[in-house]
Amino acid sequence: MSDHHRNNDDVESYRSQKRQQEREGRESASPPKGSKRNFSSEREERMAKLRQQMQDEDMELAAALDEKIKQKEEEAKPKPQETIIEVNEEELEGLDQEEQMRKLMGIQGFGTTKGKEVKDNKNSAARGVAAKNKARKYRQYMNRKNGFNRPLEKMN
Image (cartoon, rainbow, N blue to C red):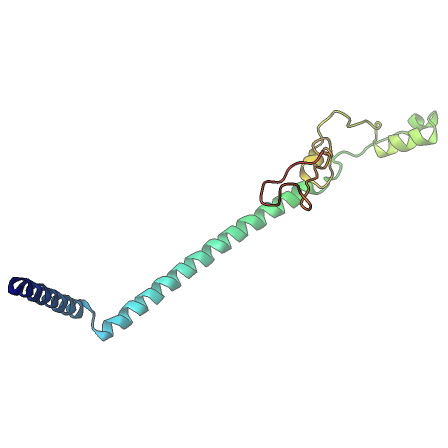
């Protein structure tokens, strides 16, 4: 029994020595109080630099987006007719009023876009062949057979 008691004392003394060493290590490793301010000021400086970099990047992105928007607006603007249509009165004499108007305005005729790809349908709110109305699919949420805790089924 004395051996057991002696082993217990050895273990306790070993543990206390270890705790003491750890305390001393922590105290020697902890920085002096003045250096703590250094760490916080360095951190604040780094954060300020990062904030400035992020603001610069945001400004660059905004400028690039503004440029793209201006380019798209310029492309979307209708371009004026570059050539002036010259029509002689002699050409208009034998035509009825509608044909005369077409000739003066430079319209050859009206066509159809059926079966043709139209640029605006893909980029705007106008919905062409690409958007088809699909039949709605209904699912029952209430009053289901076999309880609620299972996947929803499609209704007929």
